[in-house]
Image 1 (cartoon, helix red, strand yellow):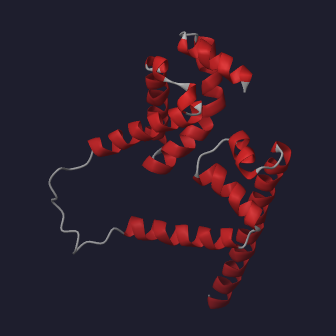
Image 2 (image 1 turned 135 degrees about the vertical axis):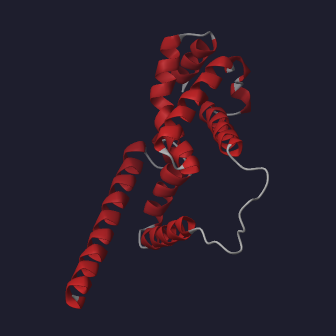
Length: 184
């Protein structure tokens, strides 16, 4: 933690090497937050770069006594993403939403329900580990502290949970293939 404090101070003093270290440490988690919000890889990459440029320009505004650096960076990313998404919104409704159905959203909801069902089959500690990293956007270090377990144990939870999901989906896919073979 002390090492990170030094890096952040160097970052605030406009040290590009510190920016690079912070980018390496946080870009993956921040990218995960952005991609979930905008659902477009190219746009997410642009917003990620813009997020770090804003952080660089406003580095003097970060105050460690008010929160963690990740939280500050997360808020910049979130606001940048929301501003980007609002920019493309139409101010006047031109579509009759009661007549047309957005099939993409419905399809996405079905996938979400299926994923929640698969997650529900996991042990509670595996569910929590995945939720903290993939849905809440925490780094492994932050998430293991949140769960109160050693970092190695936490990483094992994530790896085991992902492996269990692979097995669950493989079994369901095999069953689906067998059913389709019987129907044809």
